[in-house]
Every structure is written in C-alpha cells, then in structure tokens.
Length: 268
Ligand code: COA
Image 1 (cartoon, rainbow, N blue to C red):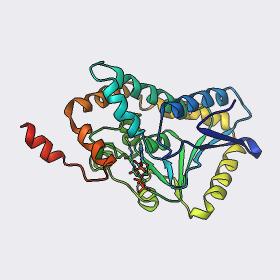
Image 2: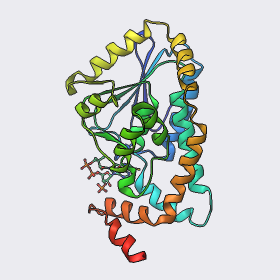
Image 3: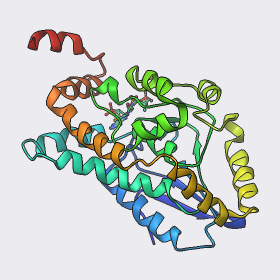
Image 4: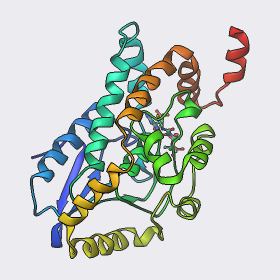
C-alpha cells in the first residue's frame, strides 16, 4: 500500500525501515496519523516484518511535534464543540499506542529534533538511537500539555521527579544529555546513525522477536496507562480554556518569546 507521508523500505533480515516524510516541517498532521495507523495495521499481520525502524526523511527534524498551524485552525474550528480536541488527542494516543504495542521490536532512529509529539512517538518505541537535534516534551512552553502519551510514558521511563522537571520546563535535551538520563538508548555520531541502527535492528531480528512481543505485553502490564491517557486527553483539551495556548502558539508562530505572566496578570 502507498502512503502519502511515509516511505517504507523492506530491508534484509526482516527489518522494515520507515521514513516519515511530511514536509515542510515533518509535523504530525491528520494524514500522518492515518498513514501510521494503516501501516502498523498492515505490518502487525505480516510476520516477515520482524523489526520496525521509525526514521525521518526531513533534513533537520525527526518529527517537529503536532502541527501547530493545523492546531490553530482546528482550535477555532472546534471552538464550542466540547470534546472535539480531546477526541483528536485520543486518536493520536491510540495510534502511538499501536506503535507501543506492536508485537515485535520498534526502534526510533532520531537524526534531528524530536519535540512534543515527536518525542512522544519516540517514547512509544522500544528503543531510541539518536545522532543529532534535540529531544523533549516541549508542549508546556506553548501553553499545552503532552497529549499523545508523553506524560505517561516519560514518567514510566524516567520516574516522576525527572519527568516533572522535563515537562514543566519543556526541556530540549541533546543526545548526550538524553543518553545520560536514559531517555535514549544510545547516542551515536551523525554519519553512523543508519549503520548503528541497522546493526542493532539485525541483532534483534536474529533473536526470538515473537517472544520479545510477548515480553513487551507483560512489561506493559506492570504500568497500565488507560486511566492516565484519559486524563491526559481531557486535560489537553482543558489547556485551551486557560488561554495559555493562544499566547504560546501565537508566540511560536510569530517567532517571539511567549509572555504568559503578562496574560495571567491581565486576567487577575
Ligand atoms: N507545526 C507546524 N509548523 C512547524 C512546527 C510545528 N510543530 N515546527 C516548525 N514549524 C514550521 C515553523 O513555523 C517554520 O515555518 P515558517 O518557515 O513558515 O516560519 C518552519 O517550520 C521552520 O521552523 P523554524 O523554527 O524556523 O526552523 P528551525 O530549524 O530553526 O527549528 C524546530 C526547528 C523544530 C526546532 C523548531 O521549529 C521548533 O521548535 N518547533 C516546534 C517544536 C515543538 O515544540 N513542537 C511541539 C508541538 S505540540
């Protein structure tokens, strides 16, 4: 099947290399969410697809997060329709959950910025190998919260204290910083990313990948996410009633620092 935002390459030894290709910024549009969903459905049933690599065709970004231009349009389109923004977040959560629950290993090959939803997508993978750019849950800098599983998966991976610090301050970490705290599995040199990821993927593929899928299910059972994901989607929508995304997203698009304090003071 052909996808408008994904390039799929079937390599040797059951490795499927997927480049996300959604110009201009490699942001997460509805089309990308739909394509990812359809591809994962296709690969779930294809046992020859033993290890999946999610990578990017963009020169600088792995994935730049939710499409903020589309979000601005949708926010006014959905204004007054309670639940519509929550439902859009839930849809993204479900597709990223499909990545997380994929019954064989999934690796994120991160050569550039993995921010907001890009970090959430990477967090849904089993492994993250990073060679450049920055990684982080940047939503709070925009007046939003992570809405595609980030609050749950970052907390499960790093613990509450580190996740709270990274989320509140919308930290963008280098590959070395991310490797030190365990957010990425391995930091590698930019010209070695493909080689390193392929070697890692092939080494997984030579092993019992179906057992890995079953182990993953059992590991995931230790921390059920459903309740947290529901609150996350509801609160993602609730950010819009604080007025903060209006300032945060406008400031980003106008390439200026956001002034949340001024807004809060004006309302008080
Ligand atoms: N949604 C929509 N458009 C985006 C985008 C996003 N998430 N991220 C970047 N873009 C657009 C920019 O608005 C800009 O458009 P313009 O050329 O019309 O001005 C273009 O992509 C290039 O971005 P720019 O910031 O100029 O490039 P950069 O190389 O200096 O920085 C990033 C790249 C990804 C580091 C930076 O754009 C960024 O921080 N993006 C936001 C990431 C984020 O916080 N995402 C979370 C969303 S919830």
